[in-house]
Amino acid sequence: MVAYLDSSVVLLYILKGDLAIRHALACETILSSELLEIECRRVLQRCRLIGDLSDTTYVTAVKRLDALLAGISLLALSSSVKKRAMDAFPVVIKTFDALHLATAIIFSEKHLSETILIFSYDEAMNRCASVLGFAVPLA
Image (cartoon, rainbow, N blue to C red):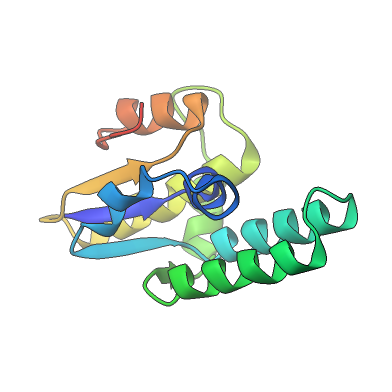
């Protein structure tokens, strides 16, 4: 089984200690788009700048993120991913969600025998992933 992580799951784990991520971490392969790292680092920086994280808790959060990222295969935002993200989706989703789902779609097309689980707390992304045929454990 392959776990595809969305930033919502990673950030809730890093910032709030949410443990639902353990289900994803139990999978043989854990992957996401390289967008995941960008999103997570931007959120952590924003939280520090607006005072939601002290300098100390920011450093701790970055270390947790780095440790988690060490076990995740980050897939490139390739031209095929970007092209797929520009195509229509069965339900309304935001741009970053389209990029994440396009990454999962392109991966699944190359790994037909793999079962891909999409881990996200975003309702629209989960709905779209489900319609596309992905399993969505956190829906």
